[in-house]
Amino acid sequence: MKLKTIKKKHSGRDAQGHVAVRHQGGQHKRFMRSIDFRRDKRNVQGVVVSIEYDPNRSCDIALIHYTDGDKRYILAPEGLKLRDTVIAADTADPRVGNALPLSQIPVGTFVHNIELTPGKGGQLARGAGTSAIIQAREDGFIHLKLPSTEIRKVQEIGYATVGQVGNIDWKNRVIGKAGRSRNMGIRPTVRGVAQNPRSHPHGGGEGRSGIGMPSPKTFAGQKAVGNTRNKKKFSNKYILQRRKKKHS
Image (cartoon, rainbow, N blue to C red; front, side, top):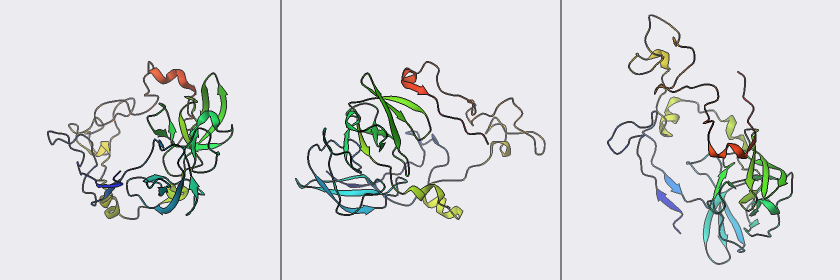
């Protein structure tokens, strides 16, 4: 398994060369690290040989050497140290860095890299400092309190990794200057009200005028505030409590 490949640049362009995603482009050349989100190497013990910086994500990653000779990267949880051992198994000890089914993890435990679809790999709680709390078990499902405060049902046969994702202080970082954002591949963002009417729904008007409409919109004209989730989405039945909205 190749652990590093050169990241191909797209600069937010589609196959026709048109801008499909704004504010992207010009990033420094970097390697993509292949992260083991599935943790599908079961019943094989591994040793942490290094904790490394990854420019493609907010958290650090840990290089694991397994006893069968395989090497893989995993997300580095808080408290995982060099020479610690980790394992993924159906009956593993619920220690930091170990991956096991949600049904085998005690209620009240912090977990990350949680599978929504069993076998697909972790999709929830993968950013720096994030974790979910196991709150209850019921009829083949686990009740999880997610970082957004949403409470959601997840299948108990899905795997999760014990612990909180490391690099907790990432949220307090200060970019410092425009040049660093450009090196990260982030191009400038211009306020909609500062643009012309052709470029943005908020644009135009004489002098410093407001947006001129009942609610803000995206540059494509879609509603930009309030509850924009599809009321008919199939996964609504798994959400027990919606996230609390932040008031500015």
